[in-house]
Image 1 (cartoon, rainbow, N blue to C red):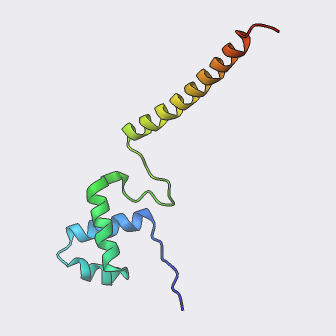
Image 2: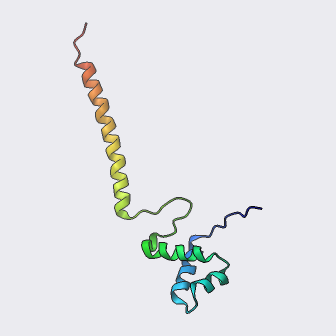
Image 3: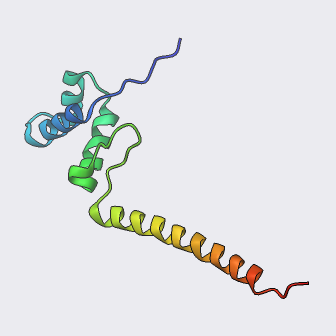
Length: 100
């Protein structure tokens, strides 16, 4: 018998992490009280410490920092400009050939 993987929304994860930081209880007790796996709570705590407000993006849509968004935008713009340049190079080579 296979168990389906439970998913938790961002708000639940944040509240669980905040509870674990602010409570006198151990993480193991908090995880048991919430009905979640202890290792999941520890993983959420680490992600929250590492990423702060950017933690728990959900559904594969990672929240990017402003710098990462700018880098992504610039990479896309560079790719477009390079394609345009390559097209122009080909056009120049075609039109610069001597007619037969």
